Structures are given as C-alpha cells and as structure tokens.
Length: 81
Length: 308
Image (cartoon, rainbow over all chains, first blue to last red; front, side):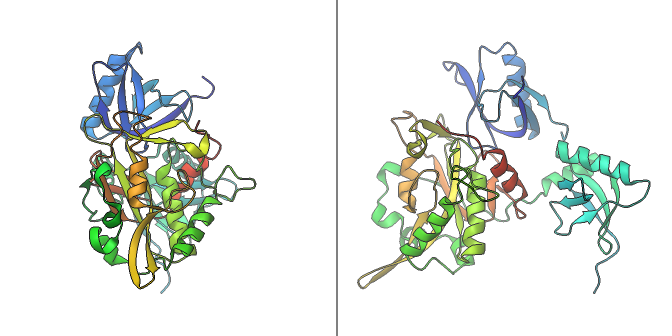
C-alpha cells in the first residue's frame, strides 16, 4: 500500500484475552495500544513472532497501513536483532 | 588543549547532511565530515545504511580535524554491550500504585506533604508563582503544530493518540532552557490486568483516546495565599488542558470511564526531566534523549496528524 509505514519497536506487553476480537500489543516506543485482529490470516505467526521478540527483548519491524494506524499488518524481525 | 586526533566507539548516526557531507552522531556533540579519500563512498554508504536501519556502527574519528576516518560493523558482542548500556536513566525513582478516585487533592498535590521525592532535591529553582506557570503553559501551547506558522520543530498537541514523550521532552527543553526552572516528568501507567488510560480529547473533536502510558512535564510552583505559602505539583499538558493542572487532576482525566469501563491508572511515577520513554513494560526503567534527536524526529513525524 502506498501509505504503509514500518516502525521498529520493542514489545512491552501482549494482552491476549480470548473473548476479545484482537490481541492488544504495547511497545516501548509508543504510548498507544496496537491491535492484532484474530481475523488476520497470519494471526498465529505474527503473535508468535511478537511473543518471541518480547521474550528476547528484541525490536521488531511493525508494518502499519499508515503512521496513525493502530492495526498491526505484519511483523518481521529487526535487522538489529 | 586541542582535541585528540583519535576517538573511536560504538555510535549511532543521528543525521547525514548529504549536501555538505556532514555527519551527526547521537553520542557526540561535534559535527564530523567525510574524508576526501577513496574511502569516502564506502563510509557514506555504511553510515547511510546504519541511519536507515538504526544500527550502531563502530566509528574511528579524528576530532581534531572533525573527520570520520573509518566505519565498521560492530561485532555481536560489541552491539549487545552497547545496547545494554545505552543511555538509560540512572537510578530512576520508584513507581507507585495510585487509587485515583480516592485521592485527597488538598494533600496529594502539595509537595512538602505528599510528594517528598528524592528527585526534587536535585533542582531547587522552582516556578515562583501560578502566573509564571500559566505563562510557561501558554508559551508551550503556542508551539502547537495546528496553529498558523508554527515554529520548527512545532509540538503536535493536536495528535493526542501518540507522541506524548516527544511533546513532554520538548516542553521540558523550553521550561529548563528558556525559562530556567526545574522540570520533572510524571509518567502514568495502565499496566495491571486489562487497565487502560482513557481520555476524552475535548480540545480536538471529543473522541476517546487510549494509552498504556502517558507522560507530561511536572513543575513545582510556589503558591502564596494570604499568610500561607506552599509548593504545588502542576502538570503542563496542552494536549489535554488549557492551563496548568494539579497532578491529581491530570491523573483523574485519564480514568474516563465514559470512554472505557476499564479506564484505570495502575501506577504513576515522577522522574527527572531527562527521562524520555519507558525502557520496559513495568515502568521501572527509562530511556533518555539528551540531544533531543529522537524528540525532534517524532515531533516532525507527527506534525500533520490529527486525533478525532
């Protein structure tokens, strides 16, 4: 997408409440909450990557549809990790 | 004594000014230039790659001539050690649980009664009156990116959703450098269970905004009423308010249960003004941004965004 942005951030917390439609993720570099929708086709993979990054304290690259978007589109390991 | 001819270290690139070939490192005040040698292109490429990927580099510098002599990729061990020791706030203040609905504002905001915090001993030049506090607030608010002809960098108060850390740090710069007063930071956290900080952005359209933490400059203000004199803790937060507010009011505004039933401030902490962002999810460690490089980058990134 034209406005896609990648932010390199470190996972602060992952709130996975089974009844919620999305998993709430917080990052040290941002004050807001980010959503990983359970309906995302790669939900399990992305959640696994986020959990692993949190355990290792590693930054990850978060793909967002725009700078102001709070929905995680994809994740990839940071080049610094 | 002239500067040394050799300096090396693991550094991060703050900026590359391509036209002038000037290089800025976050860890150095001096501006460096690229050498007029065959290595110039290779050094430039490595620096540019490091800037884009935010990776540290192993730099050999000549401070006397202001030259970057060599750039290498640090070893994994060097990188880990660098990351480990990277400008975290030294000896942060403790984080405290708070029961916001039951705060007694007649005591909670008075520094000598309820806020005997070691960090306050580090700086004694407090704001002398509420009038001066309001002047500081108004000056900060005038830096807003939504106003016509904003300064550079402007402060994106209109984008409440994120960036409080950069706004707070830029205001801290104004309070300490322009006005010369002490400035600490207050951080609030929603880190227990399903807590969230929830505010209504009344100044920017009235929608609800949710955070896992929030931060703003805290100033201590001398108040004199008749024969009484005391020091109040006030918060400067033009993204949410039109004037300096009591610390208790600032915390209360973040528990807007009309926005979220689980709106709750789990913890808060008052830190030195040098604290920038949380460095962990528990609010017990903080990053710093002594050269304001990360601050300015965020202010610029958010300058055109809106909230509601």
